[in-house]
Length: 525
Image (cartoon, rainbow, N blue to C red; front, side, top):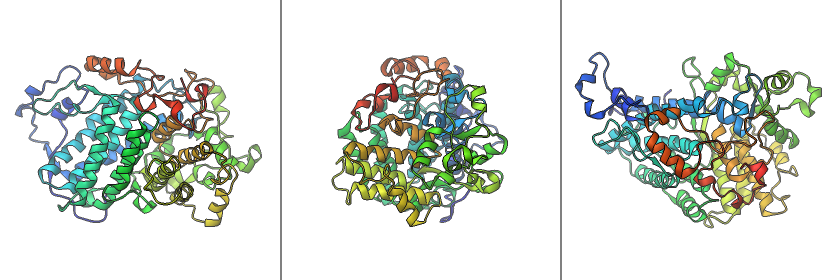
């Protein structure tokens, strides 16, 4: 997985080993960083490596985790209801999304990619090479943002310090509000520093942009905008200020699909798109009825890309149909042959092994701009909300290979899609929210976060056999943390609320402020 612009930087970082294992939250009571001496050095296994390959591996690991087969394809896709589980539907009923089952995702992010990004940042700063440390900061922020948007308060400011003098193996949990404040400062500084970067940078070791600093600026600012809008219900003043900053910081934002933050998998049998690898051996995913009903009802051109027709086309108009979420085994199994599988392009035999994973896209940024313009959050943005909305839909279509302009024009004229046909501002904002949720297909975590923020689509609701009667607002904390960092974890629980699916994190504590809010039974407790 290489980029295409510059040679990799020769800077070197210390590989995560014994010290790193103790640095994170997994210390199981036995690690004391005062004892990390040369006795831990294995002469047969070097402890340093060039910064470039460490960044490459950390990025691959992070993308594979948050957009891959474990966390996304067997976790957040069910709560976002893009997909449904046709065999072994425990995750779809939330029964295997409890803390005992999701502990590994929480723990491993700290032990692996976050630790490695920290090392790359350290070396890049030591070498005064913003082209090394700024992309690592952006990826570290992207990873931390996934963690906090799933769990709420998390170890942040004191995390990853266990192998540092004065560091702690039991880091405090930062309040999500404070974490977001740090995100904004970090992303702003990354964009500013990249504007003056002069070192060799990451070059071909960068699997996202091939060492292109201008593109990393756009990613940093676009991530800044995503996170700023997330606060709009609970702190509209900060949301508005940070949106303005994101759109005015050096480098601009992602504007076209050529700028998308995406990892292009080589598809070489070693580094394949993780969804395609999953589909080689498993056939327990079908399209959710929640998504398919919207696609089919609006004649959405993405239908045939996201999904395959069922064998018996007489079952559904157009031959496409989804299955309900949250069923028991016997009920779910009936849909094996009568619900649409994912689109053929997601399967390895049809090129799915090379399908990119999308971290942040032009479509998402344009939808952010559409909402910001519609709500008057950033008056300095040029153009109209309608123009941003229609450009966002077109960008999503293009992202998935749909480039025929008349086809897209016809879709934008559909009564329930047309911006002009929306009678009120709330209707227009609902259309933005639903289209954004559709465009986030393959990123269940972001689609779920947007649903929690907007209550759209209003048809997302817990299935009949779900273990709770609402869609989760968050996941439960790592069981490891209860064993090794209980005091700090319990402090977070006391501040945030009980450690269960129903406690709302900071940015989700004022849902009725959303102009698109429906009602409590639909939008959760």
